[in-house]
Amino acid sequence: MTVREMQEEILRLKRERGVFILAHSYERHEILEIADVVGDSYLLARAVAGARENTVLMCGVRFMAETVKILAPEKRVLLSHGGAGCPMADELTPDLLSALQKKYPDAVTAAYINTTANVKAMSDVCVTSSSAVRVLSRLPEKEILFVPDRNLGSYCAKMLPDKIFHFFEGGCPVHMCANGGDVARAKREHPLALLLVHPECVGEVTGQADYVGSTSGIMDFVRKSAHGEFVIGTENSIAEHLEYEFPDKKFYPLSKRLTCADMRLTTLAGVRDCLTGGGEEITLDEPLRLAAKRSIDRMIELGG
Image 1 (tube, helix red, strand yellow):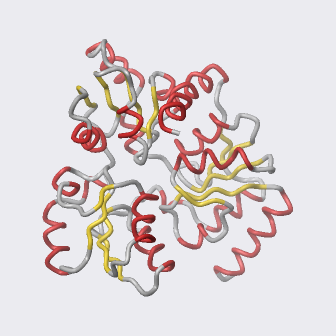
Image 2 (tube, rainbow, N blue to C red):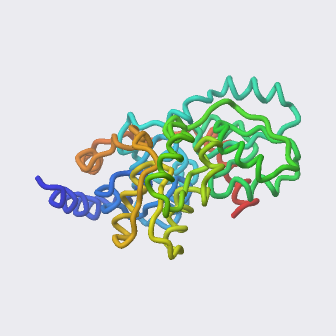
């Protein structure tokens, strides 16, 4: 079966069985082509509100599927591959967060959306990479415990010098692969290109970027820019997707190491299996779901 034949079968099955397919931007391009909505984790979770289908299939990682279930408890939520997790989300356990909260009792806990439902339930507010600075700037509290990504937290601290930040020493192992040496090489090999990077990258990378922003922010920057060359400092699938969208522009990955193995676990065959009775259903206890939802509701209240 060819890629196109399998895609056509998936499209037929999802129509027949009433399944709404979400795909994170880091997935392969052939996965994006069969999705109803493509975007970052928060956009995907919010998109479910308008879905008529009773079953939602998340082509992404576990915390994303959990976030969908938090916001749409009435839906049956499937994860495209049961082994697709997020190492950064898994780093921070409830016990570790509890210890940090005891260490900084006056700090409000701000959890990156890349966290488990259990951590969201223990947090005061949730943030995304695109909304973090805006949301945190509007908190009345001055002291913030930011978890789990120290790199995104440090970027926010730089933007908000009037706040006091404490961090968990975590981060995305994929984005942290890129370093200053990669930037120097990219600038040497592509001197005319603009450097666009994700705030999950380390400071020596973000500090030299022409633009720092979320995955959707990076793609929007390219769409609005008249520039013709870009070095992309986030998961390498984004450079590939941009090549499809803008064939007249040039895109260069900042580092070949910027590849998420967990995102690569989702395949067309796996998606088809989910549509024929396979896949893992995501369930959450109602008290946990409601507790986790409070931190997301607070984010919406402060940042939209």
